[in-house]
Structure formats: C-alpha cells, structure tokens
Image 1: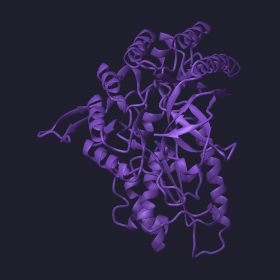
Image 2: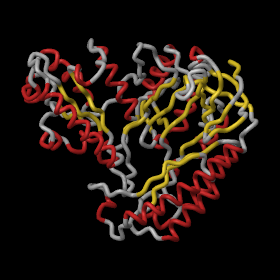
Image 3: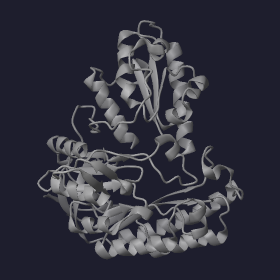
Image 4: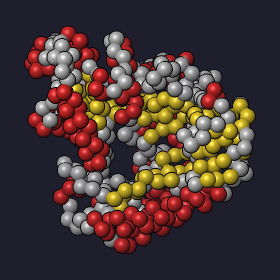
Length: 452
C-alpha cells in the first residue's frame, strides 16, 4: 500500500511540473511516505529525518530552501507532535490528507513559508482532510517507462482492531473505492502495457460498495466476490493476464470468492492468508475472530477448489500470555498446512493498541528462541515444497535481469515461486514458459525459456 500511494504522490509531482532529484542534497522537496506497522519502520524514518534535518542546515542558498514533508501512517499517528520532535519537518500529511499535497507543492514553488501556508496563506490548506483514493498508482521508472506490474488499491482502512495492530488507528475505518474508478484504472494500466496487477486493501475481503456499478442499470451492493467477477469480465481480452490480491483476512474469505477464483485462470494460484497463530487462546487474545479449526477448514476448501495453489502467511510469536503449548499448536498448524513461505516475527508492544497493557509479557530471550523454532520449521517446509516442484513446466512472468548474473533473467510463477534462466533484458515484462530443472537456495533454475 505504501508503494502504491508513493507512486500516486509521485504522479502528482509530475503533473505539477516537478521532476525527480538524483539525491536528497540537490532536492527542493523531500517527501517521506511512512509506515507504522512495525516499530522498526518508525525507527528508520526518524533516522532518515535526522539526515534531512542536517541537510537543511547545510543548505547554503537561502533562495533554494529544502521543503521536508512527512506523509503516511507516522504522520497520521503523531500529527503535529512530529514537528515538535523534529522542527526541521515543514509539513505533516496524514493518511487522510493527501488531497493537500498539490497545495504543498504550490507553496514550495511560490516560496510561501510553511508556517504561513498552514495558517491560511493558501486557500484549502486549513480544511479538515477527508480521505480520497488517487486516480492512478502506476510507478514510472527513472527512464519514464511504465513497469509491467502495478498495485491497484480497492479499499482503505480496517475495522478489525486486532489487539496487537496499530493499522486501524492510523488508517481509519474501512472505505471502499468506486468500482467505476477501479475499472478506469485497469483500462489505463492495460493501455500502458501492464501485465500483472495486485489488488490492495488492509482487508480486501470486506470490500463493499453501495451505489452505481458498471454494467448494471441500477445501483446496488457490490462485495469482494462481485468485484472479482467484474474485474474478470473487464480483463477478459486485456494484456493484463494475472491478478493477485492482498491482504485477505481468513474470517472474511467467502466460498463465493473461492469459486470465482477457481472459475477464472486470471487469478494467480497463490494466496497470502494470514494465520498469525495456531492457538485458539492466543487468536482470541489477538481478537482475530476465527479459530484454528475454521482456518484449517478454509485451507481445505481452497485447496479442494484450487489444486496446486500455494499459500503464504504471517506468524506472530511471543504474544502476551503465550505458553509453550500455544507455540506447539502453531508448529502443528504449520505442519498441517505447509506454507510456501511465511513472514515470521515476534511481538513488540505498540503504544495505543489493546495489547499494549496486557499482562504476561514474554521475555526477549524466550521470544527469540520461539521465533527461531518457527523459522527453522518454515525453512524445512519451503525446501520440501520447492524440491517437489523440480521438473514441472511453468508459465512465468519475466521480471528482469538477475542481480547475480547479467546474462540471466529472474522470473516468477503464478504460485509466487522464483526461477532464474539464461536470457536477455529485452524480454522483461513478457510471459514465457520454462521447465524447473534445478534449485539453488529457494530459487529455481531453468535451462531455456520460450515466449508465449
């Protein structure tokens, strides 16, 4: 989501005549679009802000001041307290305030001091911001070329309030994007040569639009499965051949969504299905609102309808009150599901969340030890799953040149597996077929490739 919104802000800059600077030292404006999901992300932001604060002091030409803007979740969470912490910050633009960004650019262009602009020097700057979706999120490369993949936000915010999560407090309540706007962006992306899209939302499954729907004579209700069906129809004869989506909460994943995925090869055979934990006791304390039994039943339904699909997940260990038995239940769930990969981390208290004051905190040493057990098991599962795939013939999307060898291409299967094969950079963005002939680490090797 951060990448998609950063791309949208970059588009606003280009529309107003701004171009990318080669580095912060030569920039007229620096925008940090921030994330609050992990405490470590916030720490990196403050380190970067210290750097730009130093650059502002060193800027010798007063006629070319450096405007420093902080956007995104940290801006939303801290508000003006961020400027109190770091006075070098000129503008704090929360997740609901992106509509004022053109005014910030205008103030910088006209040399209006930030304090004056915020006090009313520019009409509209003082208005209470209301969240609105950007019209496009396609990130252009340094050469002005469009990439072959793009993110497409379909909803914003979260109503789940998982007890460990800061997202609902910095993103706000759920808002769904108009289906007509989504279809318009899809047509724009198809015209720019995009081949794969990823639908985005804090919880895409709860997409719900009430109003006009393309292709219908009257207004109605459109849910997530209905949107998937609408997208499948729109892209039936489009150069966009693959669709993925993030993030999907297990409690909201409906049989209708599974059916539509199974009926349409447009939707990639991979799902990121966050389980977080394998213990019902911990899941309840996390306010996840599903049980391990319900999660496992959903996995069985998905694999029955979509044979060969791969699953990935998030796993959070060391939550307050977690016992060794709870950890064993998580390991047992992993053994049953066998995820292709997982994002694994241990609990860190986030002030402002419901879990922050929970008793039974786990020591850092125990959290690290438990996490190492989860990581070791996942590494074994990943290795086993990948080895079993050697010899299969796969369709891949060519992503570019391998970092380790300029004569090799890095590609990705619809199951979200990586494969390296000899080839030229000119093939980037094309669909092709190859045979998975070997494995190095977690990356497949292939000997030759043929374009489709």
